[in-house]
Image (cartoon, one colour):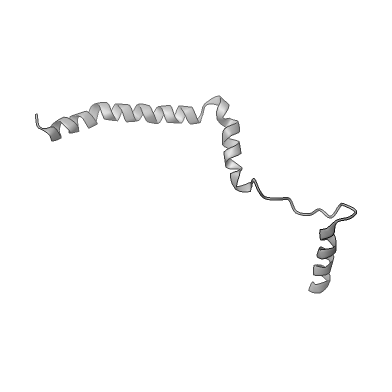
Length: 75
């Protein structure tokens, strides 16, 4: 048997089986019950450093004055 035929037979049988088992294992690992928290944290990475906007509810709010100035300039 030549080298090509051997490798082709190996790829058609055992390597295919190994890759299929690897794929099934990866899917099962990703959908395991304890991974929900990890996936939620990973999904929130782009929003991690965003700050909420000013609500202007504090008595000594520094940004409230700047917002008032911008509103007056716009009118």
